[in-house]
Amino acid sequence: MTTRNNPHILGTERIGKLLIQYSIPAIIGMTMTSLYNIIDSVFIGHGVGAMAISGLAISFPLMNLVIAFCTLVGTGGATISSIRLGQKDLPGATEVLGNVLMLCLVNSILFGGLFFLFLDPILIFFGASEATLPYARDFMQVILLGTPISYTMIGLNNVMRATGYPKKAMLSSLITVVANVIIAPIFIFHFHWGIRGAASATVISQFIGMVWVLSHFIDKTNYVHFQKGFHKMKKRIILSIFSIGMAPFLMNVCACVVVVIMNNSLQKYGGDLAIGAFGIINRMQTLFVMIVMGLTMGMQPIIGYNYGAGQMDRVKRTLKAGIISGVIITSIGFLLCELLPHAIVGMFTDEQTLIDIASKGLRISILIFPFVGCQIVISNFFQSIGQAKVSVFLSLSRQLVYLLPCLLFLPALLGASGVWWSMAVSDFLAFVTAVIILMAHFKRINK
Image 1: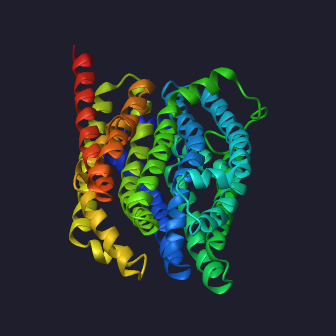
Image 2: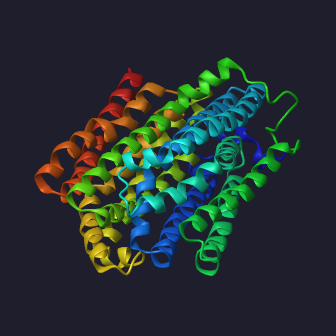
């Protein structure tokens, strides 16, 4: 094993250097994934039509629900792996790897199959109309059939990053995205397969990424790799993975619930095009949120390792650097969306009515966005040190505690604009909550 890929450097190397080494690959990977989603929406908007963008937006909550069961395993497994390595427990980290793979396969078959069987009723409940249902159905049928592939790729890629291979984990995402961007326009514009072609391109590209990730863990020269009996699942490991992974899982489930309410409010007060506008706004905000999530993915093994090793000073310095970086990232997103809303929305569609609705919504919903970076980093900090309950609460605070009540009242007062204002108000309140809880945490530690 080379020194460069030795995870124990997490306890000795300079924090700034480690944060760059681990975060930059994750940021690139997450950015590329988010950019693909944007490019895919652009292909669909121009190649299939404005109503297809609305159909795609209808599928967002179901996509969140599907991904929730994947992050439950992948994020929990990655955190446990890095903590085990910080405790010099290589056999324990190896056991976690095998359990992550098996849980990904079981969850994908169980929940992917269940959603497939009841797809139409689910999509109608999520806000689909007669015009948008065919597009949402065509897209999600293909995605759900590919869940064993996507779960395996995403779940093991998280573990790869946490066990000392951030650049390889970045390449996994890069390979997937590049393949997707090449295949999608061929399927949409050349073969005229429409939105089903976009979904097929996604699954095929994830299969390519899955092969890459599996080949890494099969290679016995890597520090953590599959060993004999890897398929044996152990209750104590599964419970640990679920405990830590519960925060991002519940966050995705809540995002699903909230988006369902959003879609139904927008359908009531603005129609199908208002839902399409949310789809565009969601893509743009997600781009910068994913960049911050990439940052926290890089922070997670550093914080997890040093917390496991009892080096609290290094934990604090990593968190401080992460918060500053997160705020800078979301502030850039705020400035771009406030200054160039029509140009940004115009990338997705030529439909002027949709452009006007989405531009207005983008400028309102992004108002508190600079603070979002801080809130995300703090929430992931508690996840990284294994404080699942605090992380769960912070993850849910924006969605359930603040956004949901706003969505129940503001649209009734302000129409479709009430949905956009609900997003801004809940962002601010969630930020304040996260800062208060973090200050209380360190005050307790200092005592």
